[in-house]
Image (cartoon, rainbow, N blue to C red):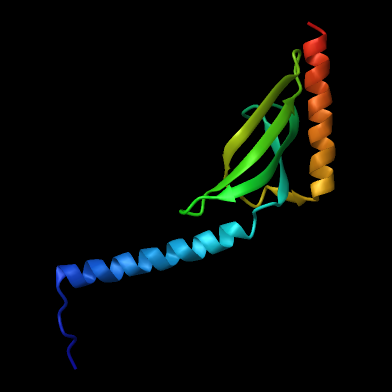
Length: 121
């Protein structure tokens, strides 16, 4: 039995339908992470010093990308602080899920540290 040839338009329609199904599956998977909190062991590009980067997932785009509130205190002479109110988060196995209470505790520590740094100037 020979397969009936399909047109370019039919082939494109099949490809588009497959892409749309995959996008919907990725979005459904991404939405499961909304509200969850994570931490990641960060470093300065191979530096010996390491610290935690914290994130709380706030939304998922229609393409399945996660957006999150993220912050980190980078230990150094100046103890740099970074806050990303709407960063893009790509969850890899290195990210550890943490409780909302743990995230909130670390966020409060971050806030206190920023306030102290501002008051010292």
